[in-house]
Length: 295
Image (cartoon, rainbow, N blue to C red; front, side, top):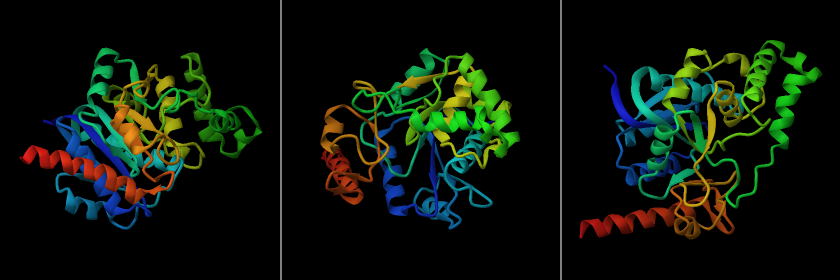
């Protein structure tokens, strides 16, 4: 019988991952959640970073790649292996994917997602969508061009087997209302168990034919969601938990707390603050709360 958890957390690590920072990201999640959970480290480092992290978190599982998958579609493959492992070994409601430069800064970061997937089971993946932190729609020019190049132009012949399959997915997604290039931002997102099971049934966890396709994993999973009849969900507007940007934080650390955000990306920098300073800021916040509880 499979063990049950409210959620699974998957964190992919690569050769340049900082073990100290990844440890801090995992600690931030553990500190702020009360739900039952299992942490899975998707290790594509080829340096046994997953094993190092497992020493800090003995209950975490490690899914290790046999050879380097790399970025872009390689990350889609690496994550697919971890997602497949999760649904084959455990029962759960939702899965939270967090990059190593994502951080949890608020209590019960999963509550809104659990509610969303329960009340609207057609939502397959949810997070920072459809706009950036300030409500401006994402610029879809780059992913739109990549998808159209692979599916509708002469570049189709560069990898015809993969691109034919991609075109079938794209056509199915468009019929279901897909806006070419749209996606739930990939730095951190929730994905439903139901959607993952459909992907597994369709042998898309992973599809190795996509290895040389230069799309991001968030574009793959969002496209597959729409092609499979699922919707993309908003967990970022207003007081909803996600506060994400591609490079650096979308707002000052203290502003993110004031705005009620719970899951943020990217900790790389904010103005003159570097990653270590940003992480120290939020770690100190956790320590203050912990000290108050001990009194």
